[in-house]
Length: 289
Image (tube, rainbow, N blue to C red; front, top):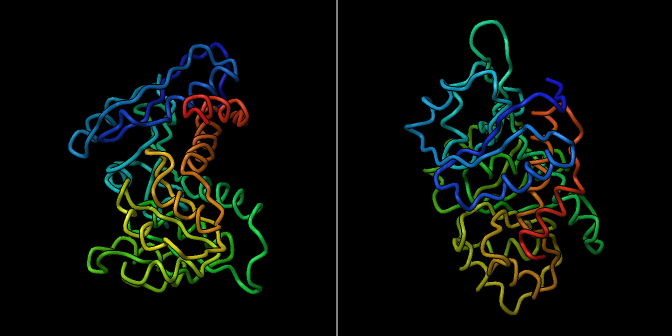
């Protein structure tokens, strides 16, 4: 779909909870910069039970949806088509509403991988030279974002990261996603994550706020050399980000992933190149950076 200034469209971020989301800040800034004055973007608190009803109510005024937890897996069987990357990862964070005779066609996409690659690229660009050889990586967590992280690391050339998680028995979705990607992670518990993280070129924490506070405490007194991306951006800085910086590492805030994945969503929904600088300024202003 190609957007025009005069065509009114709607988009929204769905999740539960969703009030904290910065997606409206980013998308509204993009619409303003693109001159899409009749476009609107909202936040809608929707849980898994209500998702099907919301999707069935989408009409020709809708351009798309951004999805956050817990909807990234739940949406898959409700879509008409799923793009290959999203299917391989097993997680959809973007629903595109394509208009055809009859009811709209809902297409699932994944822009989290794009956001992770771009955000990690920012950190790797400023990182001091690491050890020679392939990129080494540690992923903390086993949810939808962890699966997207494995895909992103694969694009960066790391196909055997270490995944540290609470219980392998609860990581079936991640294991299946890794198999589909051709990525061969090494799995370990959280008791060894501090040692592994200190030695890695890249560490991505995908767990919720405060869930990595124990790892932060274990990093006290250590030295690290790699890049940390903590996908949590509230509170900012997280305890893990602060500990990583104190240990000498490069920190990429979770808001950088959010920025880049939102920019890709804007491109997909509007058909325009996203105004990244304008979106970045709006995000910086909102966060007081």
